[in-house]
Amino acid sequence: MKGLYVMLVAAVVMAFCSVTALAQIRINEPGRVVERQAENRANRKIDQAVDKGFDSVEEGIGNLFKKKDKKAKEVESANPDSNGDKKPESNASSNAGNEANIENGTPVKAGKPSLKSYSKFDFIPGEKVVAVEDFAQDAVGDFPAKWNTNSSGEVVTIEGTEGKWLMLGPEGVFYPEFVNKLPENFTLEFNLATTSEFSFYSGYLRTIIAEVASPAKDFTNWKGFDGGKKNGIELGLHPHDAGGTQGIAMFNVFGDENAASIMKNEKSFPAFHVPEHNVVKVSVWRQKGRMRLYVDDYKVWDLPRAFNPEKNYNFIAFSNQGYHEEANRYFISNLRIAVGAPDTRSKLITEGKFSTTGILFDVNSANIKPESYGVLKDIANVLTENGTVKVKIIGHTDSDGDDGSNLALSKKRSEAVKEALSKDFAIDKTRLETDGKGESEPATPNTTSEGKANNRRVEFVKM
Image (cartoon, rainbow, N blue to C red):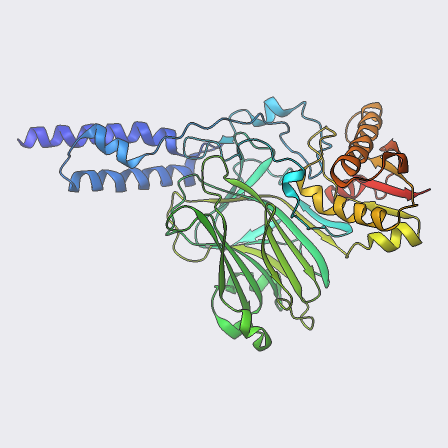
C-alpha cells in the first residue's frame, strides 16, 4: 500500500511538472522569477491533489489548468514607437526566443476594432510629447535602466504583441525616474496586460499621480491607503470581478480634505482578463482639476475636482501593493506623456495651422488606429462649424527608414485622414487637399524617442 502511495505521488508530480511547463511565462532568461512562480504553483497544486486523496491524475490536471486556444497575432515590430514608424525588418531576430506566452495563450484582443467603434471616445492627447517609454533601450530579462523599484521586474516580449513590456514583480512601487514635473494640463497613456488566469483575489494595479518632496527618495514610502501622509490620487484597475464579467476601477484621493466626497469610489467597466482581451490601452487626461480615465474606448471616470490646482504634481508611479499570487502579473508598455491642452479651433481658424501627434497609425502603415477618434472628431467639429474653410492635410514622419519610403508613407497617411473625415464625419472631400513631407520638415531633432514622437504628426493648414 505504501508503495502504491509513493507511485501515485510520483505520477502527480510528473504530470504537474509537464503541464506547468506549458503554463509558465517564457522569457529570454527564465531563471529567477518565472522558475520560482512555476515551482510554487506546481507545489501548491500537488499538495491540493494529495490532500483530496489522489482521486484521479487526469481529473486533477483537468481541474487545475484551463487550456485556452488563442489565435496569435503576427508581431509587426520588435521595438515599435508609439506612432509606428520604426521598420520591422529586424523583428525575427530580436524576438526569437524572447517571447512571453501567458498562461498557454496570447493576451491579444480578438479582431481589430474599427475607427467607428470608438465613437464615444473623446480623449485628445496633449499637444507636445515630453516622455516616451517603450523599453527599446533595455535588454530582455533586465529591469529597465530609467526606472526604480522596491520590488523586482523584468523586460519581456509577449507573443502576438508589438515591442517590449515591463513585467511588474509582486508587492512594490515602480517609478519612471524621467518624470519629475506635471503641468495643469497633461495626458498619460500606456498599454496594460495581465496573465490570462488572473485571480480575483490579487490586488489592483494602481497608477499614482502625486506631489512628493523628493520622488527619487520618497517613492518607496507610498503604501496605498495611508490618508494624509501623501498628496495625490490613486487610480486602481483590476481585470475582473468575482464573477469574471466586469473589471473594477478604484479611485482615491490622499491629503486633500476638499476632495473627501470622491474618495474611495469604485466602479465597473468591461473586463479584460478573458483570453481574447488581455491587452488594453489606459488613458488619463488632466485639465486643471478635472480628471478623465479611459480603458480602451470606455470612459471609466470623469471627475471635475479630482486634482487639486494648488498641488505641484511631480510624480507618476505604478503600484501593486496588497496581496498578489505569484502566478499573477501585470505588464505595462508604450507609456506616453504629453503636455498642453490642444486648442484646435483657435489654431486652425485664427492662426491658420494646427498640428497634432494624436492621430496614430499602425506600424509602417496608413491604417488609422481607433484611439485617434477623439482627435479626428475635434477637427471635424471645427470644420463643420466653419463650413467655408478648406484645409490641406500634410503627413510627416520621423527619420527612421528610407527617405523615399517615408515620403510615400506620409502621403498615404494624409489620404487616409482625408478619407476618415469624409466617411466617418461627413466632411466634403472638396474641402480637403492632401500632401506628405516625409521626414523633410522635422519639428524637433530625431535624436530621442520624444523627438521622433513629435515628428510623427499630421498638419492641417487653412487654405
